[in-house]
Image (cartoon, rainbow, N blue to C red):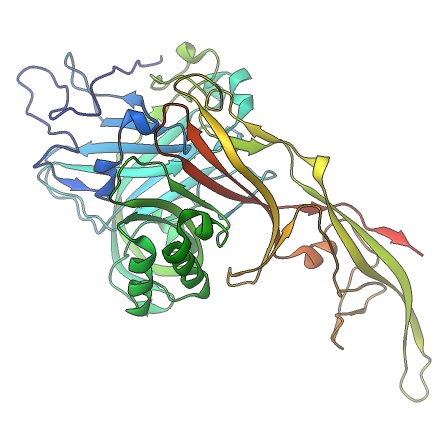
Length: 483
């Protein structure tokens, strides 16, 4: 049976609502509270900036475990979950891991924006796991995690029982951490990936979601990169330099996925950046304790009262925007012939070669869908400004090397052969399929090309705007052969 959430003054409360005679629990933003999450969460929490209370287990009438509440920023599409661990005997732990996952094999794309810098509309993410450098405390402590949500219009017509979410909080004791082959001892910052649990995080190549907050962020990042406190990559250097010299607008042109701003603070910048820098973690998990695993009914789903989970207080579909289909590129190739000279005594062999030359994004192959619960003319809604669509190309290390308008027609020197030999355009030979195929051959031509969409979400109440940048994978139609 569904469990109702109760509301409270979450923005300004000093003490959490608990029954009479229950020990006092300070709110996470109360002076003296023991917290194990990024400090800027305290300043960035107000309803005027788009935060809404979605779930809450605290009550003045009964004690419920686990003790948690979750807020959601409707202008940024971010869920921020706070969990309170009661004073207990110490649990052996070096890290706290959070997982937000689809329950009971649900198949919806709501988690597809969670960690990857390039969003896919083909394969739905089942789980997002996050490891944080915090220890469990014996004195009572607040923990928190943040997850980006993909707007999923289909939830409105889905029964809640088939689209449930589960938030797992684990205390994980890890003997040693090795990052990129170097023994570090600790993880600095938050790392997020679409894998299940701490064991898989330790054996994955991660691209962390970096949460940045502070004064003069660009200058601060440059200083830390030069002091080797951040991974020194051309990608981060370009981003930090652009942020320092041109602010959010300039920095947005250097990334594939990020959320800029949205907080009303005048002293600090807030950026949620999906880093393209890979981190290879290895180590061993000695123990892992499941601390909490609340089941959440997604806002906006139908028949929610008949589901098994915690009901939302905010009941509008989450997420800011999505695409209805994967963007498509049309490829055109010209047939040519190539003769391979045989060794003395052997015959020459001729191959039919298709030289893919023209690529163009099919602009009507997809539509941008904005969430009408957010993008509207109501006083608590918002409007979209500075909408931009671009084709971007990057190198393997994540550095953007070219940005094109979406009507740009581009070419490739890569060739596809009917036969078993292909020419790479640089004098080298490579195996090829027996004939040009829709995507397995063409994928090599399109490697590193993505559709990037960026826009500003401008609240109708006059509060601070948010800039959202999101890149999507594209696919190619079967090659059209021209004689």
